[in-house]
Image 1 (cartoon, rainbow, N blue to C red):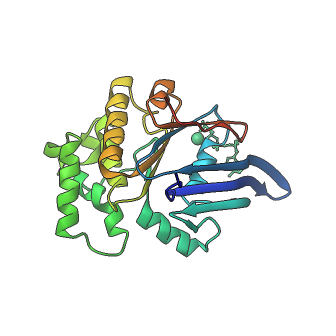
Image 2: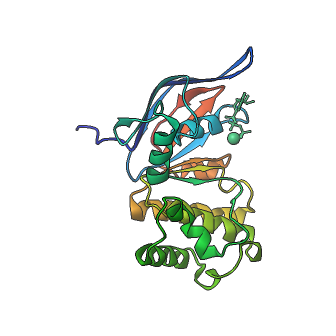
Length: 233
Ligand SMILES: Nc1ncnc2c1ncn2[C@@H]1O[C@H](COP(=O)(O)OP(=O)(O)OP(=O)(O)O)[C@@H](O)[C@H]1O
Ligand SMILES: [Mg+2]
């Protein structure tokens, strides 16, 4: 059966950080594909290169060698402005710390990526974000400020915000790393079901082996090398 076109494909990707005369090679010959609707975990020790890998997938940084293709087109080496456009329109981000803006409400925070597109948010987007916030159990918090929410609730807002521009891919760097196990479970289950419902691909860095084993694919990384990237089950 032909492989359907992947949401993102890395081919022979390497990354070496250069600072003055010091070169730090961090990623070596990384290749894998993530398809629409797939939920993948990236697992590896501290310093193994997980955040570096996510930054390359999210077009926040350029690979030293190799190709990063988003929906079939090379994007890793595009000029910064064009990479920013692909990033804004097709990729959502969730970080370990939520980075919600304290002076805006929950609903406004969730809508922020729409505003960054340069268009004022539209009624349809507001309705969609309301519905998503309702789905993650925050219907009564739309007008609250982030400081009035628990850590788990804040992270649920960050998950909804990542979906604001209906991205093809969401990248999450230890999204449950700062949460107690119960809130972490709620956030993980939400990402899982949102991914299933929307067909959005998710790639999540996690140290939690239990979460990793519940995803579709575990990408294991050691000292900058992918040691396996097999589907689960
Ligand atoms: N801008 C940079 N310049 C030089 N070296 C860097 C830079 N960013 C990261 N590194 C190095 O690259 C290696 C991988 O870092 P990275 O942040 O990708 O690891 P990680 O797997 O995300 O670790 P953690 O689990 O602790 O978050 C580390 O040795 C780190 O010191
Ligand atoms: Mg990291």
